Length: 274
Ligand code: DGL
Image (cartoon, rainbow, N blue to C red; front, top):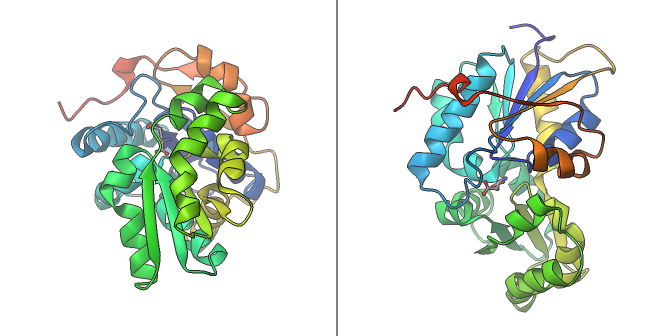
């Protein structure tokens, strides 16, 4: 492996672009290959077996393109599949759960942390386990917010409807006295404004993207795989189904023009487990 090879990033769809945005800011010299599994999004409502199978296929798609490191930019896949991927992965790999936990522990003074995510992420208990491992006395409360993903995918992130959804899901967190809320889904940072309005300013919102980018940089450095270029890194985006909606809202997630989105033939995905 050499430092000039790209970093591979995958998500079930578009949400992982919020992580790519942070990676691009922290590592401007790195080339990034992003795979959004738009044919099979959402992962958050699927069984662990299915999430693991899909994640292995995404990973192998990127591995075929000679990535030097894997970033699982999906909380659902990080919670359920990353431990399995790590057993077989021949390259450095990182997810978004532990970086999110590290960031939350820095934010919370009251030691009362809330977590929101997909049904699969919350059901896996991955955040709760990691938070309690870091601090056994921590108060942890969590809730799935399934409507947030389609709202973000739709680009419907402001106004009455997303605000009502946020108020409905998040009211109980205010009553429980938390002071940090982990946005445990890579789609949720797109709804940051309505989430902040629902919980009020005393609760700090924790988005794992920044911390994931910092940890990716550190991991590359320690493996002597960091690209020495100071800038000029590229970002190539692949999807497994029609790119139309992805192109329509992708730039807002990425924070810069998306460029060409390449749709891969699904026969290009290694369906080897079937
Ligand atoms: N981006 C996924 C995550 O972070 C959520 C979308 C999905 O359900 O696939 O969990």
